[in-house]
Image (cartoon, rainbow, N blue to C red):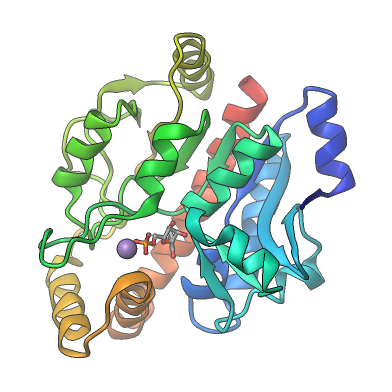
Length: 290
Ligand code: PSU
Ligand code: MN
């Protein structure tokens, strides 16, 4: 059921560096038509670090690991959002399935890939338990031996609650040259990390030790190079708009991101694109070090 592209298969067989990339942010994280360029740019950054990109998604009844540019173009806004629970359904029903961080991690585990890059992971949504919405990214991270490189947790979530839950789940939260978890658009003000690392090599050593000790997923938080520190009022506005519009479940994150991209005049969009690329580069370096 899983088809691994030749280049990725050869890299894995030879013990080479591979980075898994998700397709939800390609399909649902940016305005229509723009996500594909973000995905391609991520792949270029992984390669620049000396690793092989393995972009994951469901196409034509198969879970695919490694996509061509034409295939990536099929991950348009009408693609299904596929978390860990949705992989089987998307495959059996031959949907175009854009995998989230959680969905991509599940595939990475099956394929033996140890590093993944994204923008910001999902987590505990604000206002929990009204509604009781926690991203499946967390549960999958707790059971997959892989390093997820992100700009921390998306700040439209309850970041302190997410950090607590990561501790509960035994997931190390590493800060890349920082003592606090980055806040997606913003760099400072987040909860403390469980350990700070100074280099990709140190992060890789930490991951290898964690796995030897029977651990699974690790989060490596990299603050954006050009953070936006004034987005919080707009985030509150976007969340209120989502509630008023009755948006719930899987639709919340895409709705809020689209609202922010539109109402910030593209500032959050540009920041998001830049940090995804930066994370892909660091993920490539961690994969090489591993
Ligand atoms: N990072 C981004 N943009 C995104 C996401 C991450 O910069 O759109 C996606 C990832 O696929 C992540 C998902 O898994 O948001 C979380 O969605 P939810 O809260 O519904 O689990
Ligand atoms: Mn959810």
